[in-house]
Image (cartoon, rainbow, N blue to C red; front, side, top):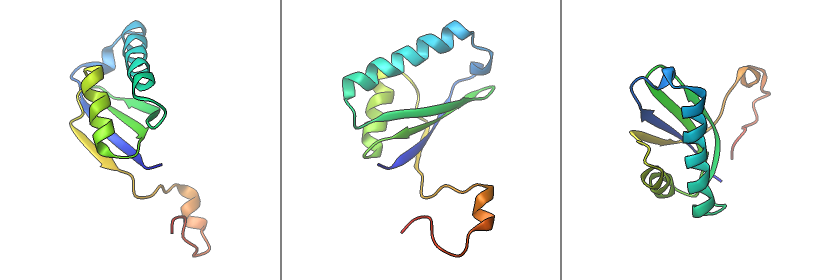
Length: 98
């Protein structure tokens, strides 16, 4: 299933309390249950003023539907084309993706 990176502009989010983060996570999970198994939240990175989320979904429209129902911004959504890491430097020339 395709993965997407969602950029959410949320000024001051890095100063949110644990309780605020738990509540936001619960909201997201409730909407995910409502939408069904085609969409999955992998994890998120919280910075000072943004959250970067990794989701699996069949298409961008499902990501937007989740954001709208949950009340979260989705300022940018980008489909992941490939994943690289330090082990990519050690590859023998074979592609990780067809």
